[in-house]
Image: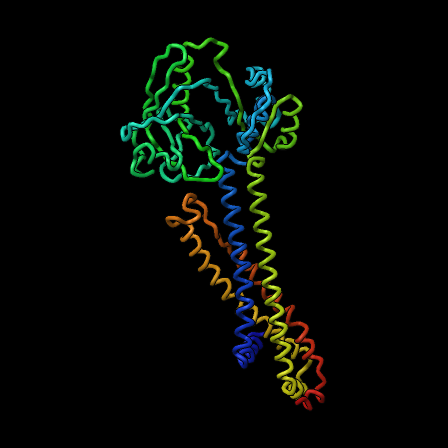
Length: 429
């Protein structure tokens, strides 16, 4: 098809402006709907991947003694229920820790086995408030974590300074005007030794505030230097049997040496319970996938409906131009050229509909993102969640699919026009 054919096709389309306009609007609505659904799918997928990185990434696995399986499951799924008592040891022995380190695929450099503090008595406060808050922390020993930060940064694993990262919303509770205003300010962490009953205050500097997310640590993150100082103070007078107790292990897996499934099976055979980041994110990912698929079905139904409009428009056009078709054939125009002319009209309808649809979806997507993150918006708490994310490949794909549907829809009326007998066509009233 040449450019001239399309110019002629566009002129013919606007002989009946109302009918062509309504058909283009039907395609416009369908293509805009599908484009927005593609964008939402991109946004959701990107956000879930971000949440996965918040938990260390897909290469991380959490391991506990088998006796802790029910407790860990309840913790991860939010289930409120009692777990059956077990007389088994709820902590790893040094030999078990070493056994896990020696398993194929375990990355010893990214092996996190925090020592547990039992019956802790600690609180967190600042110079801006008289309130005291219960203090439970976590530590990141690997730079693989890609936690989205609202302000500042994560503590460096190599730093000797006492540093802390707050979760979104904690700064205001501690008396700061905002998350940003808290950066660089000191916090006081007060622990009581369970044996001597003495108190010690640790002063940590706020180096960052994490963004609100669906899957996140939900606890302040402290530097390894601060964690070590707290543990040493807390266990200063503890008996040896109470030191070095490890409740869980989180480690990176070298997937070039084993698969996650094989490692989990091996751990189960040795009596350990394990869960991966994909296990934790699986339900969320599955829910969003179902919603996006349902929306995609509705979008394609809209496009199919618009294709029916294309068929109707061209059928009417064929009937209206029957004498014209007969005259063209009498003057020597081939059936193939007539078919091409009507097919070009169908493609033109699809082209203008999809162009308008894509432009409208881009504008609508940006408006949706802005409104969702405004005060009171449904994504106000998740500043890194861009609901609509447009990809160039998706724009091209949707454009080609819509024009292909329009071409296919125009095939039947174009074939009918091409097959008309010129004598009968010239006699048509």
